[in-house]
Each structure stands twice: as structure tokens, then as C-alpha cells.
Length: 126
Image (tube, rainbow, N blue to C red; front, side):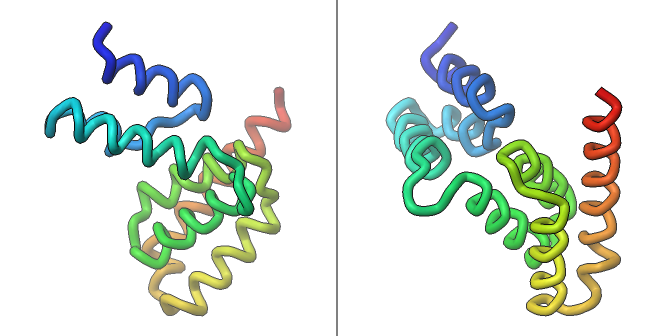
């Protein structure tokens, strides 16, 4: 296993997800890959002033206001994994609608709510 794959496996095992940037970075050289991996660790592995839950809610907001439904679904799953409640996610979505306008309800928010309901339902059945 090469060093890049080891980094990807480590991040995925620890967080349950791996940023696509980490995988793509290896195509730009080992030094660049290491910079991206270290930056990822700095943001996502260090609790710092912002808890991971808040970082995930911020990431969700950028995905929704950027009208990126696939990433919004991913960020919702991460937020739930790191302890965000349904109410916190809904309030984040309300803020996004205020900031980005009503079209994000149809383009993104609807998919996030479906994902959240499915995940919560699945977890409650376990």
C-alpha cells in the first residue's frame, strides 16, 4: 500500500468519510498530496474553538448556498455523525434559504431533508 492510500484509509476509518481532494491530490505529486492531507488534518482532526459539529454545519451551509445537492447530502450525513440534531440542521437550512433565496428549497433543501429523515429513521430502527 502506498503512502497516499494509507492516508486515505486513515482518514476514512477515523471520520467515516474522505474528502475527494485527498484522492485527487496524489495525481499532482507526493508533495502536493502531503500538503492537502496536512491541511485536511488541521481542519477536521483538530477540535479547536469550533467543534466538529459546527464545522459540519458550516460546510452544509456552503453546500446549500452553493446549490450543490450531492455535497449537501454528504455534509448532512457528516453533521449527524458528529452530533448535530435535526433541529440544528433545519435551522441551518432556514438560514441558507434566507441567504440564498427560495430556489434552494427545491434545488437542495428538499434532498437534505429526505436524507436526514432516511438516516434518522434507519438509526432509530437499529
